Length: 371
Image 1: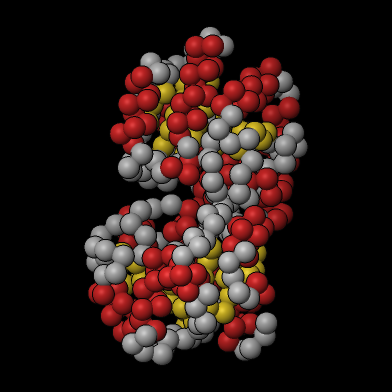
Image 2: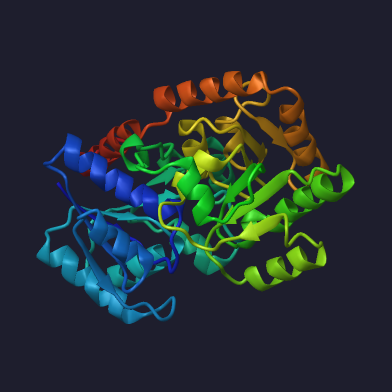
């Protein structure tokens, strides 16, 4: 079974990690499945594929309609006798639809990794309802329910959680080394966040939480660590950080390789997103037994149960998120219960082994005609 995975994103995030985890798991469990990846040339995803020894090809992408990607896609399908094209982002989907106009491509499977609604525009609706798409794999129930409103055949929608691969989280380092790497002052309680600087992550609320705790609640013992790619939101975010006089209390570190290794120094993990599918970073926090405080958006409530394995608040509600941190500070005895519950839920229900087998079953359903 020859599968071609399409990625056309220009950054690195949980979606790309999902592609790698899927290919790595299937290589171990089902070597008869031959996975090959087509990605953008010269970016971090390509470097990560090299590091993980995953078979791939890369091509430049300068615009959302770069025909070089289309040509490379058609060539790979023919050369590698591809049976299914697994598409992992909307730009790659557009490329696949264009390519199918020039040559008959094999059936598509599309992974919907966010909970963004589909825009009610003719071209967008055409793309997501393209006849070659036989299955749409949704990252959460919330994502599935949102996309269903614009899909003509809802039976194509399948929920498959992305899951967690423990083998990728075995870091040989110490808390002391990580604190030194980030130059964190001694004696601080660390509140961490790992998210790229894009609007769905709402990092301005992260700053508001910090400001409320540091200045309103006088918790100057707290230190806020933010790790993630700099993007269009970065200049505004850094300006707000300075305007809120948080330079000595919050630091943005940009991209860090293997960012999840820093969970070893986080006392709390704070996720302030306004829109989510179901972020992999929560799986990582659960695995490393760091208490999670998050917004109840997208698929997050499907894994984080309030007062059972974490704490939830509405999006944009900085004061409530801050209160949750203070609640755990005052009730430290709850933290082991929360983190043990979280870890147990993760390893029993959200592994990449489960994800890979569920995805493989959908490949078989498409190839052998089962709905």
